[in-house]
Image (cartoon, rainbow, N blue to C red; front, top):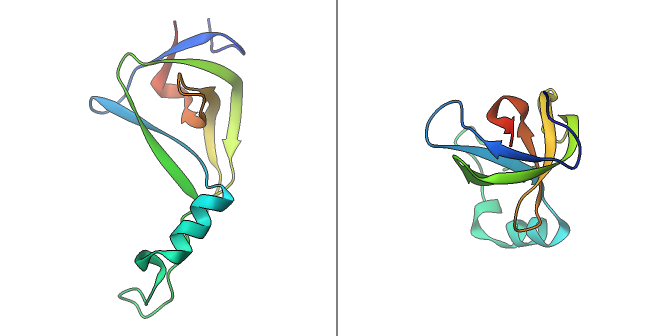
Length: 106
């Protein structure tokens, strides 16, 4: 049985004791980055720094999440799309993208 909408799933990391979920930055987080010292200056290549596109969250082995969308693709990065994802809701109410390989139906 696969990952279905509105059903619980258990986090099972493929590599190591935890895995990551991510979501797009909101306006407040983006404004805070531009106001911080991280946004100032140049990189080692002499280029201006680019703002982050996503915020990462660490999920531990055995954490329970709710599947919101079973099949999704993340298109928010500068590179190509991240396929084979799903949208989950954590116990804290955060909506995150995660790789489907690190989830099993609970």
